[in-house]
Image (cartoon, rainbow, N blue to C red; front, side, top):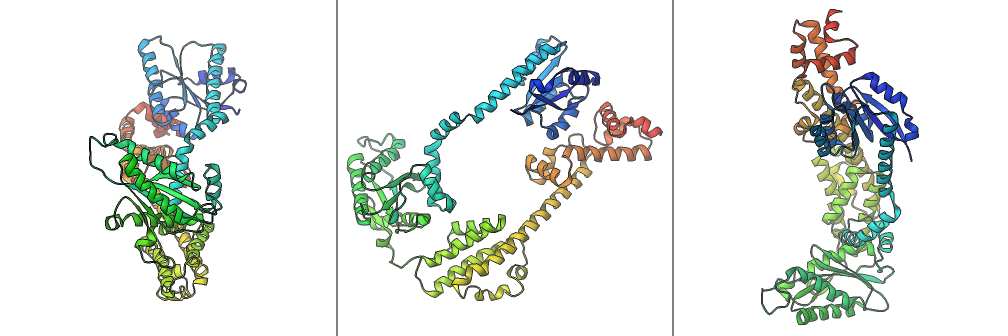
Length: 535
């Protein structure tokens, strides 16, 4: 186990040095990563030092140990805190307990006592980490979550939001036996609204109806075919594998039987929508959408039966349409990349044209829809269309790109990649613009003692955590360090060019306490504000 990081906070430098010097920290399982003179100083260093444990005195200037503890609990609730106090005061101890302090230690404490306390904390930290890493516990948790994970995966599968390459491994992992079939069909079973009746068995227990219907579906379908049965927003959904032991016609007959038996046994009317077959499991989302569409015809053809999409919509040799999910996948790939993902999505969308036999004009309309999706993205982010389509292909001549569907993916990929590069550059510009706006806001409001990262982020409409990361990455400084630098630079200017008293200058640059201002100033410049003015 690696050493835990510990930080010492005490206003007496000799106490801190003696503590660092007298303890065998590594033997105890710790490494001192830093120290601080007071609570305010500690709070400013916490983000950079990232300690696992903070040891702090309770009585310190500018910010005492209890206030520091309260602030740590807000931002870093997992940090262990030890408070040293020279006062056997019940009120102090009571406040410490409320703040979930790990140890409240009365001074004086000798090295052996402190070592015992640190050993106890180390064992506690070891236990926490061991629990999180415990393989058996994780496996038990995973097995307990398996039904939920299975349902989520199947929902993603029928909505085409799962990674194509992960379909087969996930089916095996979740024990879903529908692989290696000749074809697949999707059915969506909808429970019809029923009248409240005293004689109806489940009328007074509406919450049990979906469970009873799903149980009926499982009892009838599982002996007949390999299938996955799960819940979606549209109803109880079935992915059925059709192979040598069953047939599409047999499945339709069985679904009709289930609808009849639901009415007879449960007194519940259900309707099943059945989609077109598909020969690749990765394309099951189309069959699912067809099944949902089939349900839409129940007001016309009647409820309480299985409705096959082929029976209610004109038979064609396939559909070719860029749906909302396809647009989302293409848009996300172009916006976030990388190139491999962009290429995979474009190849997938272009590959749909090989799965259907339609008129040439339909191929062109489909390709135009894909191009139009990119044009909308260009307009949304104000990208230069001439640059995106390239010098040789003006965007008004895009018909050239959709003339041959065999070359469509190769023609489209460079355009999508240029867009991705442009959007990356735009994000960099946006980040720099936000940082610039943040700096301007700090310069305008540095004199406000209440100025905080939360206040700044409310102005920027950003989360403090994301802003802090972005600010540090772009400037190389934490927000607190940058604000302190601005305040002290202004303080130096006032000391050099005005006769204002030190306490007045402190207030003008955002420090309510003159003593803390002097402390921060001396820490930065090596002398107090008064001596600085005198030099």
